[in-house]
Length: 448
Image (tube, rainbow, N blue to C red; front, side):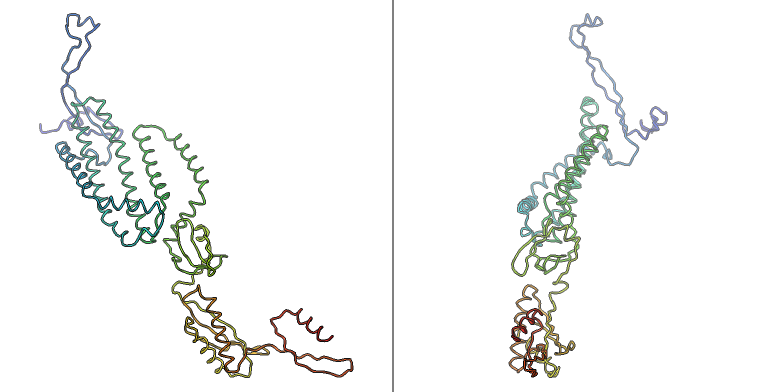
């Protein structure tokens, strides 16, 4: 009457399940049932060892009433799509030498764990492998759909039911493992490689493997629960305990690694910048790995700072947004000199030092014995600032001396009385930088 067999079964309520299952397909086929005749009185006059019966079978396939791509391939296309997808895989493997070479380079680079093996040029080569990886995913899904249709649905009546159940179980497992594998590939090409391209640092192999392990572990949990119908309570308890023990053992390393990822994303400093991290002395950043930040001070000493400590500390970057840093000196000059003269002399003195840029001088205040002048200049190399300060001080001293000017020194007037009650007045020059106890010793010796 133009109705399908499935429609008839549903209409006549031969199959009517309210549990969320629905008819997917049905098959009618004939086979031979062999019965052993030995020892059976019913077949006493039968000469053979087995009796063959013709059997007519009626099989139905049911599936959960949910949206799924499984079983979406029509029966008459299963064989052709399986062959085409296999040919596509073979063609990809034969002509995909660049990916093989690229993976070899990445394997060597990871073993060395050095950013010198990764450059912006060869990282940009990832665009083509990324597209090919997408094509692999499409071919794999197509092969799974077509081959499942061919080996499960179209083999009904040809293969024994136990083999069909085995094939169905294998495909149930593959539908968990194959997506898990491609999720790891997506993370590799769309997360790790862009991070490496941005930071120019190699992602630690332990991070990659740990991520892949978690993804496949979740897939295995799904297989145990949904394919084999086993409870996950005991497995989850064991896995949770193991994960807790491992996490406590490598807690600091994991913290350093994720802090390294955050530092490479936020970029508070770059390799070559001069920075001061918390209480550490200022140093030049020589490397930023996923575990530590390596610094070198002006004396050439090197040390490593854990990334977890760096991410939680105050950071002063002397090289950002530019490399210019300001240096200054306070110069005391006698009050008898005019400020314009002194300012010009100080600027001329600083200008004679090659690496001192944009010198400036101003009168910064008065004391009871001198006028304080503040000399300011810039430099673009923080590592040479101590040597530059020495050169500037020397140039200022020489320039002022050539013009008959010396830095002011505090003088105090002291009245000394001798034994003849005659007052003797002398001017004694006292350097205010010396401790007071030395002045007392000097006066006691003078009085004697």
